[in-house]
Length: 371
Image 1 (cartoon, helix red, strand yellow):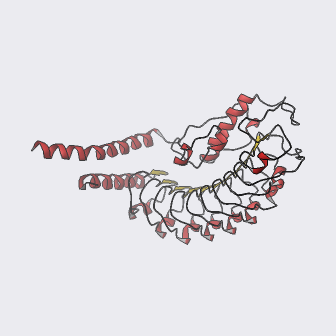
Image 2 (cartoon, helix red, strand yellow):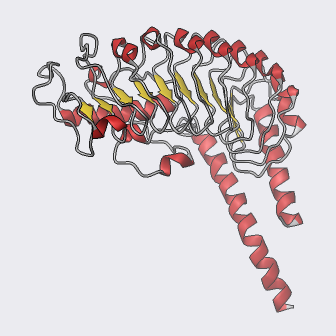
Image 3 (tube, rainbow, N blue to C red):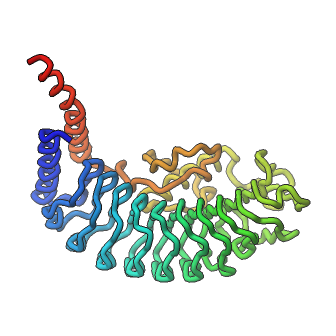
């Protein structure tokens, strides 16, 4: 980075922080500024509730970040962080936390002290074990740990009775707790691309379950008769790319064994009083986006006549090809749609300085050539 660009960028960052302090702003966006060390001035922003530090080059999160006692949203995804201080558990007001795409490898037990946490994303951090303390996050609504090295799920996780959105795809999970039905609010469960051997029968007792993704596992058999008593809003159980697909198996209109989508004809579930398939799909898309945004209600979509769709940018892993929305919803950058006009203007200024930074090297080369 040229000295001029570095000077402009660092001073612009400090200016944004100073402005947040003077105006007592609740939102501060410092994402994509190539920050290596968090400026100490930031820890004096007592009024900031939403802090965005994703897509930088941060290596260390100092304990001083806990001085920001009012934080409700903190994004640290896409950095180079290898360690979080145990004191992070002191951020008692935190509702949304994203630490994805960092070389962390472990989750501290102190994560369980974030008693108000509702959305927690730790995708692709080299995680091998989910600490049992996660069961203490009684308000957790959304949890994503895709692309890690997990082999099991702690039984304590099934204590999360408010959890509605669970994404654990692309791990090495072999076994699941027999008490999955305790997560009675579960709407979307993504376990594709793991090593699960037995069909999780208990999860069929979750009354709000819409999508259960078990494709590309090692399941070779399922119960001959599904108990559909509780599954009044089920859309699909995906079992593609499992050994059972090559064996004799019971057919069911909501179970997908092949690339063709299951037909809803003859289903035991009475959909005559439900919205049309197109409206349910639109609602499902809204659910997918809402569940990864700031804590908007992620309830089964057929309970809303006109679901609200929020447009927002998903993380880079959402670029993976998939024909179904339920296969591609990932962690988000937790917002950027909920900005005031003033904040939008500031963001445009930030983009201007970034653009200037891109042009400066070209100008300097031109100047040296012209001379």
